Length: 493
Image (cartoon, rainbow, N blue to C red; front, side, top):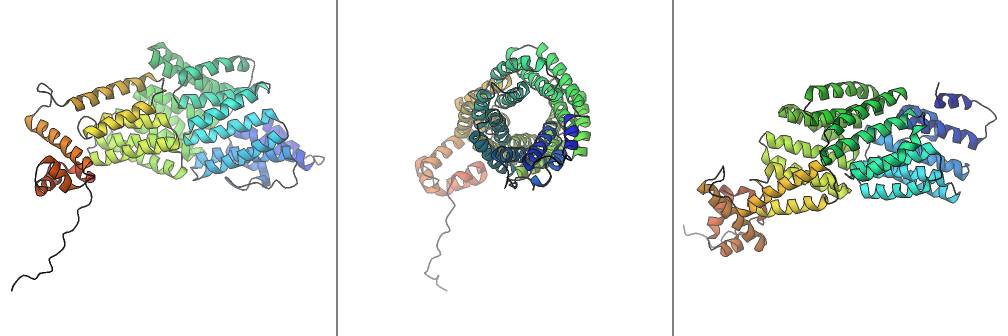
């Protein structure tokens, strides 16, 4: 029997006051939330739970009890909203948790302020707003200095989660080193499972950055340890997440069969739990794996469903990643215009949400798939500059290598095709040069074909024909053609 089960029996104690019973319900719910058992947490809250994002009835409760109710309802709304992909759930959760922070501050409960602020940070993290999440967790870390050891460890591990998502792995490693001594004497399997998972993620990334192949083997061991601890804690949902993380590493190492096996095991658990959000993350990994195996049609079928799920739930960073995968699939299937559109959308979605590293990676993918031929000179330069700005703080070696490779693509495009290039043809060079100056002329003339033709020294009709045949991709640069007025003078009969 665990702590939550023991406390459930205490609820039957008739001597409990309303505030005491409420606080007990909240403690039980918090334990279930920590274990990933969302339905059990909802039931533990009883009448305090009115639905995802719904404000609980806190009338008659003292400030401490009211704050705790708002925190647990807000935290559960965030987790369940992500699991079920409920639109607007993270915003509603943020409102509830922010209200709890204010109440905890009013009664001077600094340790609960820290935990509440870290839960608030998770809502921002889910939306891809990493900078906002980092600010909150920095505050929470300072506030949790004198708190219970396990509560402080929880805050620090949440901070590591955000730093890993933002690609700041050296900082993540420093926080993990601070957390390790706190957990050495702990028997909390859930926290230890989280620690080993985040340590594995950090090792995996630093292994690529610093060229240590042995880090990958260590990361596999850490993932395995994490799965063990989550099994001991009966955290099935989190155990499935770690199997997804392990599958991603195995895919990167080229061990495709092993990766599929981990995804299959995790999928069985998540289907049973009905967790649409995590299933979508699992399917995104599967789609990447299928791309590596050149099974593009299967990858397209899977990633289409993933996008529908994330689009509904409003998790912008995850949506942007899924859109990026779809852009790759469509490029490989030859649907170039659709691929261009979806990759541009991926960059915008991620950047608008604050997930700058995700936006930068989407921009790199746009260059990798289309920069050599299908992007104009000006766009390929603009996209690269945007990617360079978005990834300026990344410590991920793979991201930096991709950035450098894309820089070479841009330099080749801007320098023009050369005689000894593999795909050199005279007609190709002429067409590329033609497109370059037509695009410049259209931009200078504000999209006017007449003005552009004048700048180029050719007839209006000649330029219109060129745009409709050899340079269709530049049609979007022109202003809509105006219909010519019919003459009011009748032709003689």
